[in-house]
Structure formats: C-alpha cells, structure tokens
Amino acid sequence: MQDIEKKLMEKLVPILGLDSVNDIRPESALVRDLGAESIDFVEILYMIENEFGVKIKISEITMNDYGADGFPEDGRLTPALAEKLNEDFGSDQFKEGQTTADIFQIFTVRNLAKVILKKTGE
Amino acid sequence: MRFYQVDKVTELCPGKYVEGVKCVSLDNDIFDEHFPGCPIFPGTLIIEGLAQLSGMFLEWCRKDMGCAPRRAALSLVQKLKFRDMVTPGDRLVYRSEVKCLYPDEYGAVKVTALRDGRVCAEGELLFTFLDILDDGMQEVSDALMRFATREARIIR
Image 1 (cartoon, each protein chain N blue to C red):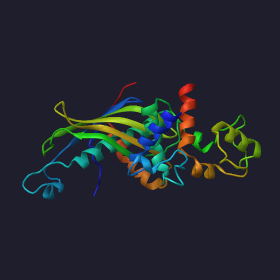
Image 2 (cartoon, rainbow over the protein chains, first blue to last red):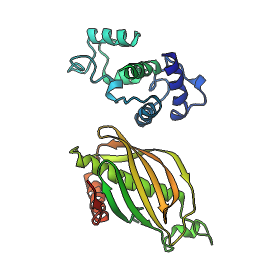
Image 3 (tube, rainbow over the protein chains, first blue to last red):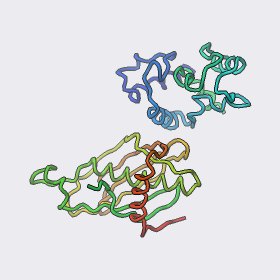
Image 4 (tube, rainbow over the protein chains, first blue to last red):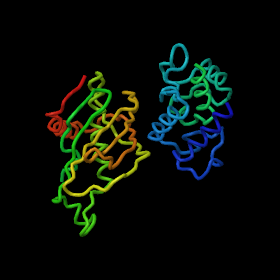
C-alpha cells in the first residue's frame, strides 16, 4: 500500500502542477487540498491506467455505484453506507448526509491508492 | 476564417484508426510571420490538425457504438516530438490510432504526421467527452466533417 501511495504521489506532482512530492501527503484531498479540477481527473485516471495497469471510473471516486444498492436515491450518504465506506477505506472522513459532490471534494490520495490496491488485487 | 487543419479524411477503421491528409500551401497567411523569408509550417498547427482528426474520429466511433453524441475535447498532449520541418508544398498524412476508448469518460490516441512516409511529428493525445452545449455550432462542424469524410474508405 505504501509503495502505491509513494508512486501515486510522485506521478501526481506534474499533473497537478505542484513543485515537489513534498507538497503532497497521503491525507491530502485531491480537490480540496491539491486543487485538482475535473479535467485533471481524466489525466489522473489515464496515468493510473498506464502506470498501475488498472482502469478506474470517475464513478468509483464519487462512489456513485458504491454498495450493493448503489448510492441512495436522495443523493446523500446513509449512516450505514458512511460506516461501510469508512470501514473499506480505513478512515473516518465519510459522514451521514454527504453528497457525491462532497465525497469528490474530500477524496484523498490514500483513498485513491486504496482503490488502485483493490483493483490490482482483483 | 475557417480553422480546419485537415483537408480530407481518407480512411476510417472504427475503434482502431483514422487517416487524413493536410496539404500545406504557400498562400497560407501564417507564413508572413512564420517565418519572414523562411516559411515553416508551425508545429502547433500540426498538433491542431492531428487533434481535429482524432477528435472527429472518436466522436464518430462513439456514434458508431450507439452512444449519444458528445464533444471530444482535447485535454492532454504528451510525448509529442517534432522530427522534421514541414514547408509549403508538403502533403502531410495524419494518422491516429486508438490506444483506449471509454465512451462515457475519455479516449487516448497515438498520432503521427508523415510526409512521404517519413515521420514529421508523433505523440499521444487524450480527449474528454463533454456534453454538447451549442447544437447549432455542432451542426456546422458535423456538416463540414461529413464533407471531409465523403470519400473516406471505411474498413470494418
């Protein structure tokens, strides 16, 4: 997991226009902290496909398809889904009431590394 | 002024590749400045031509796959190298090969510009698919592309 995080952070530096890898921490949120824009995500997903050999969809970052029943119809996280997300990602950042837009804002480098790790293991 | 940097599409193979032609002529105003007394076709216009051909092709592929129309927007130019100079009188063959195509998200292509079989430029382009915001503009663009592809050989 740490190897994936390290490589991911190194590869994110030029895409996000940062000066060095020291500007990124695993806990940094791609959008909120590092200023990633929607067009950057296309480049990020393409980089992941080339560097890690796995294809990730945008919906896997916004969690649109998450859980057996998908995202709740009202577009907000239920307590059960928030708990499942926190458990799967080993974090406490997901909370009841958050929308897909909120999740997109707070999605971290570590979260992305987790998705890559899960995919590479499949 | 029309800003179309492809004269003709010659060959289309759905999901795989497209080829087109660009003829470089001395009557192009760009040579007044680029450069005085030494006309060289700008590399940026070669990239533009490769991007126009590739974008049109990816839109065409999506349509061929039964997807709702979306606009292919150039979002990344990478590993692009200019290998040789292009001057008036040159006939460039642009080729774009699909590296990956995810109709709901993005597409990547390997592009080459050849003159007499020799590589003048090569690289990779990445496109994002966006919703069409102006139907009128899209219709104009589609009509011209229909004209450009009227003699294209479609290989299935």
